[in-house]
Length: 388
Ligand code: GCO
Ligand code: MN
Ligand code: MN
Image (cartoon, rainbow, N blue to C red):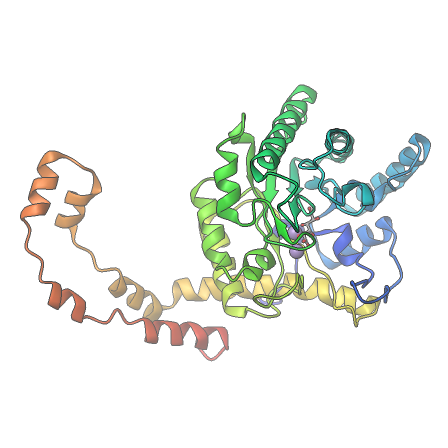
């Protein structure tokens, strides 16, 4: 693995919309030509990716006729067959069309809510036809700039209704989807509902079929909110809810930058890769990012190669970290063990509680010891800088 060449077994995926990003921003026109879905599929396969993901309208224009849809789908499926790429995840574009300007599932207009559910059923049909087993809900327009109109409790009730409906639809059709909610604090809405991983986890518990729902956390999104993405992912894993992941990078507190994985917060990227690898996460490693607007097509493929290469380099660094004798000795010393006390605190019983209450602790002595984090962190940094 020393050449860090991506292979399908690494399960790297990209969205059609990521490498296909044409470099439009709120202030400027596109800087790149659109690439056809088939071309993207062949290029990604050449680079060693495992799969490609899509919104319904990345592939099928929103106004396509049945005949147009069938033709596009035939060509796309041929590209998948020829290249060996798979489609593990599908999703719905519920944000681009002006009809969704005030929300889709949470729109105040019952007609628009119904249309959003209808559009999602069609998109689920499409995803299932392409073999997708993970279905992402990114509620980009589910939010508000002002709270005068929508009562947030109503919005949450509408959201729940839609997700419950669609979960039943998936089961009735035998699609076997696992649904992954993707939280984001803001952009394009001033405030988006279910803004962070914890909020989505709490909401899932209120759904009819919570076991079908999990998370699709994105590096950039928690980071925009100034939160620790690695901690958020750990919480999703701990809850058995990490169904998918959007890898990219981001400066804290900025607009959604969707930078190349590892471009900005290398240390956080390292601990994220280590968490994913150590925890045995089996899902796709999806890069939801795009090349800088400054780049031409060559830059796009450099970007894609870079995301995968950085992941593999960090995976190798995680392996080194786990095998580094000095680092592991410091971690061992950091985690002070006490078998007798752990036995008391592991599970409540009257006896344990009484024994614990009777114990004398030397608080002063306990507080005196430095846990050695400066050395441990410096060794981590040196390992990452390649001098260990
Ligand atoms: C964003 C989002 C989107 C979603 C995508 C899939 O950039 O704000 O991450 O890219 O991931 O629409 O639902
Ligand atoms: Mn994003
Ligand atoms: Mn995303």
